[in-house]
Amino acid sequence: MSMLPAVPDTARHDVAHVTRIDRGLRIELVNSDAAVVAERSLEVEGSCTELAAVAAVVIASWESDVHPEFTHSRADPIPVAESRAPVTAPATPVPRSPAYYDVVVGPSFSWASSFAAGGTLSGTWIAHAAGLGLRLFAAGESTRTVELGQGQADWRRWTGSLEADWRIGRGRVALDMHAGLGLSWLSATGVNFQQNQSRTSFSPGAVLGARASWGIARHLAVCLDVVGLYWTRSQTVSSAPIVAQRELPQFQALASVGLALRQSTSGP
Image 1: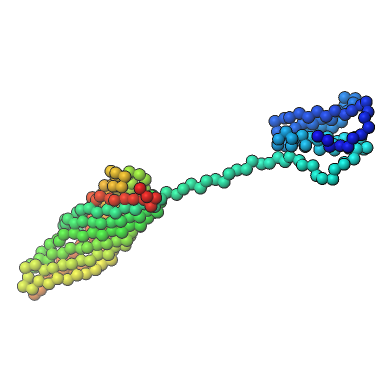
Image 2: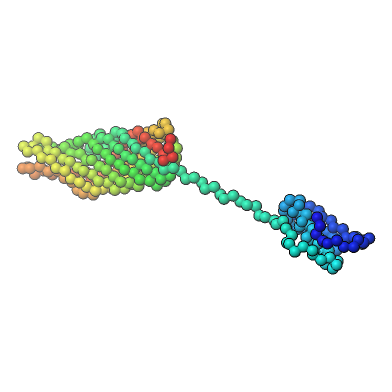
């Protein structure tokens, strides 16, 4: 590669030593008396042609200083290989778990001063298969009976709730803690009175519970749910003409076993 114009040939020449090192080049310029005129280490990368161009520029600069008779004969800039930092590919975002939902139906048993059988239906949606989600719950029960003077009253509650759900665990086994606001509809009917009457009453309340689930197939799980319910209104039944009055329990405990049909938003 020619980097300097031709000069009259002489018997004495300078010699350049170019050595490839781990991180670039080492260049030495030695004159005819075997004395080192200049030396330099360069941290550069590139092909052999590019490295040769770098070495030629350095040597030409030294020779111009040592021999003023040399003049640069090119106006165009000489390409120099640059050391480039490695390009790092952008990090691939970690995909978030798909949302999860299930629907559970099954029999139940509840206690509110006496036991009653019933049934429950619930739906749960979790944003990312575990963690925070929402739950809808509904329950119905068979009638209970309380003695009331010369007769009795049959009563039952239908309940529903909207709750926050926190899921612990993924896969086949999971534990859900849930709590929220409830609403009950109570109906009572007199029995064995001269005139039997029926009344209904609503009450807001609070719901707290826990549910454990075990997967038995890809989209099926068995669930055990234990729930406590507290109704804020005091509700009573009474009789006439002999006045007798009974206050119905405001606290109710419920346990249910159900089969869950579950699915994720990512599909099967």
